[in-house]
Amino acid sequence: MPNMSPTKVPMPQQEPDVRNKNFLEVAKGYTAEMAMEEASRCLNCKNKPCVSGCPVNVRIPEFIAKVAAGEFEEAYKIITATNGLPAVCGRVCPQENQCEGKCVRGIKGESVSIGRLERFCADYHMANGDTAVEKPESNGIKVAVIGAGPSGLTCAGDLAKKGYQVTIFEAFHTAGGVLVYGIPEFRLPKAIVKKEIENLEALGVEIKTNMVIGRVLSIDELFDMGYKACFIGSGAGLPSFMHIEGEELVGVYSANEYLTRTNLMKAYLEDYDTPIIKSNAVAVVGGGNVAMDAARCAKRLGAETVYIVYRRGMEEMPARREEIHHAMEEGIIFKNLNNPVKILPDENGRVRAIECVEMELGEPDASGRRRPITKEGSNFELPVDTVIMAIGTSPNPLIRSTTPGLEVNKRGCLIVNEDTMQTSREGVYAGGDAVTGAATVILAMGAGKQAAKSIDEYLSSK
Image (cartoon, rainbow, N blue to C red; front, side, top):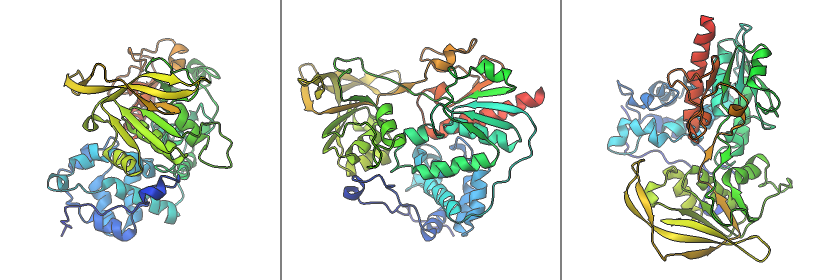
């Protein structure tokens, strides 16, 4: 009989006043007993609505049944049949809006904790599994993948399993994309990402770093080198700003830069001499997951006061509820219904304060969210020494500007056939943030998976 408890088995985690001073992982993970107890809450529904909510179609009830039976390695095999990055997805996927959002148990209580169970299986395998990755026999066909983020890694892994000789060209000095430069250590330990990437390399995927496509090589040159198809998963690393007075001051960062210095360049470690302002008071502008990550990093780097400044209300914030909850627990101050209009300097040209106006919500806009309206005469100052802009990103124009025939939309995102992920160039496919703009890890992975399928069909037909 299923365990009919209406609530999830709680996840052990660090206490807020402890974790906001370190970069160790917040959530500690389930024990085997906890995982089996939580797995027993699954009803193993006939129609499996949870699977339809997963962009990479993990066979969720099947793997959960194995967990409930204590067959953790078998559960891991089921997950990795469709998902090449389970330890990552178990930690950072917005399950509440996807698989868990469709769970039947969520109708009269809390859904089954699918994400935590996926993480448990991946972590258990890393700690106890000894099965070597079996390298498929090569078919001799070369495919190039641009970008070693979640979309590129997924595409590469799926193609390698089919025998293709896949080379990933990564602009940074290390692979992982947003998984290593964007998501903080306390949410996604980099050792986890490294292990997932090593599994791909064991399949035969070659990763070349410090390769800025559009500078070192062009896509046309890749084809000249014998690559028969190309996948663009270069992400959306171009930061957006508000274009308000004072954005040029010392102490103003894009969230991308701040997180890259913190995570990839390891500013949080004392033995790294990474240039970053050790702030006293910080304002993070934005309401998404990136804003939460930047604010929580600033707190851990020693800021006494950290504000989230967002022009809409708490209910309209796009960040995951869990991330908002954790930020609140850690002492982040939320200034909702406020919007920056100016960044004010001190006598040395550094940030002294941020001037904001109060907002109120009007009628819904085109996105369906209520439109924020300025309250006239409500200006006030927040005394801060650092401002972090976390209001979105767009794809870097380098690849499209050096590749004739690639069509983009008005936001600079590559236009693809949504069924095949093919761009306007034959043999060139794309997915992830390069196509959608900044989105989630799992949606990028789903696009990479679809592109791999289409590339295989394209090359097989030739």
